[in-house]
Image (cartoon, rainbow, N blue to C red; front, side, top):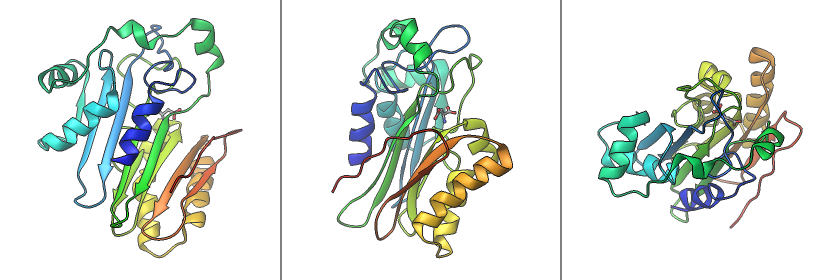
Length: 230
Ligand code: ASP
C-alpha cells in the first residue's frame, strides 16, 4: 500500500518525529504510535507505546490484517510483533543525540493519504508523540476517528499536532463526515484547523484526499511540509 510505504520510509528519517529520531518522553525514552486504515472495508489497525518495534507502521498493518483487534499497546503489542516475525530492535536505536531532540521540539508526526486507480483510499500515520509526554501516553495517531480515517465513499484524512485535541474532537471522523455531506476538501481541511484552534486552542495540521479530486492540506503551525505524487 503506497501510504504505508511512504510512512515506512519517513520512519527512517532522523529529522522527522517517527521511528528513528522520534521525540523523547519525560523519562528520556522513545514510545512510538502508528495507525493505518483502508477505505474499502473500513479495516483499521493501530499500535501504541512501542519501544522495540523497528517499524511501528508494519505492526499497525499486522494488527489490521490479523483483524481481531484494532489497537494494541506496549508489551502485548511487542509480543504480537515478534510472533508475526516483524523486525525488533533495541529501544536505544530510536534515540538520536539529545540536542537534536531538543531542536526537534515541535517537529511533527508523519502521515500519508492515498487513492489508487480503482478509487480505493488508505491512510497511514506514525509518530513519536509529544515531546516530554508522560510514559504510557497514547496520542491520536493510532486511533481511527481521531488522528486518521478512511472511507472509500468519502475520503481519507490524517492529522498532526496536539493529539489530545484531535482525540477530544474526533477530528478525523468529523472531517470525513463533512466530506460525506458534500463539503469541498479545501473547506474541510481549513475548517478542521479552525475548529482545532478555536475549540481547543491547539495547533496542528491535516492532510486529506477526497473520493475524487485533488488532495488538500491545512495547518496553523508555523510550517507543515507536505508533498503530492501521482
Ligand atoms: N499528534 C501526535 C500526538 O499527539 C504528535 C504530533 O503530531 O506532533 O501523538
